[in-house]
Length: 457
Ligand SMILES: Nc1ncnc2c1ncn2[C@@H]1O[C@H](COP(=O)(O)OP(=O)(O)OP(=O)(O)O)[C@@H](O)[C@H]1O
Ligand SMILES: CC(C)(CO)[C@@H](O)C(=O)NCCC(=O)O
Image: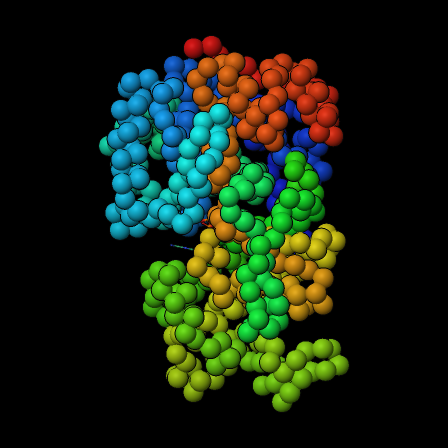
């Protein structure tokens, strides 16, 4: 359905996302991003106050995701910061709903996290990006800028709202690439041992025995990531530090929601999914048997496979009696199957067997997850495995991971950054030579490493 995106991987220029550690040779435009840890250029310009140490944002095309790392204690903050933090925390943790559209997903909370040497809990908050003006007012009112000069942000909105944050909230958005963030977020989960994060559906072809099962994600390479947000990005991940965006499609979660609202008059994603859960897409789609009267055996197409999505709607009579539940279900199935089919082709081209589906389109959406599990298994004769994550919007986590770059003390900053960004090994390197050795140990090109220096306060 989206041929162009199958052939054109839209790769971000690796050199455009300026990071603290640069290993020369990454910006060779060879369709591959080497994931590097570090901070943006603006790190060099920090002065007076460091960046907001406990927050990160992912400002997407539909939803803005905010993470808050609640430290177990505030001992290492000064009095003024402590007061501001407590005010913000009272507001954030004191409630699970903010205004009419902001939500804290309590079930996603991650306890016993160690971020940059601090123990604490990670909270996940989301609100529609369309509500950004209200969030900006709130950030002004709660004096976010009293705590820091900047905040780490990813997603397209980190670029779009950069100026307004600077002028209105007096916060600099330290920008991170959204796909770098996504891959780092996924890799963060192997440190989250309290609960199994990754899962799959056993027996996806047998609805009565199809069950959610934990999947050991300790050694996952290579794998494909299909990030279903407003649109869809597909990445091939070869190692912890190497990935490429192999494809994408504009027919994504935003398309489902937009079309569903148009066709059924619903207003929210939850409503759309609820309608779909009660609908039957067979009343809307044309199946192979509606065309063949049974299977099309020569090419292995079963009679109950969809031959033509929305094909019944060619008939005026059928349109008249189409129920909104059926329309919602057909929209969901159409979008999901199309994404599944593009994912399958990418997996084949990339010679990859594990496909991790993420993105908020999958939130409260077991229908699509089971459909994807079915499609991967059925159409690949059991070769491909569809995997899912409890934190389906995993990319937020990155920003917390980068907190190390922005804490106050220069020496400590480098240490915790190294710790946070480089597995859990306690590296103690602050020079370019030392970083070059670290990169080489990890099998990366360590030549020509430069280390950005932050201005002394
Ligand atoms: N409460 C919600 N409101 C709106 N959409 C929702 C909601 N919950 C789930 N969704 C679905 O999730 C999609 C957005 O997913 P996600 O937050 O991963 O993407 P995004 O970051 O906004 O988009 P992109 O990455 O393309 O910029 C929506 O298009 C919709 O299909
Ligand atoms: C533009 C982004 C990356 C924004 O997150 C996403 O919505 C997307 O991957 N859209 C699909 C674009 C395409 O490849 O056709």
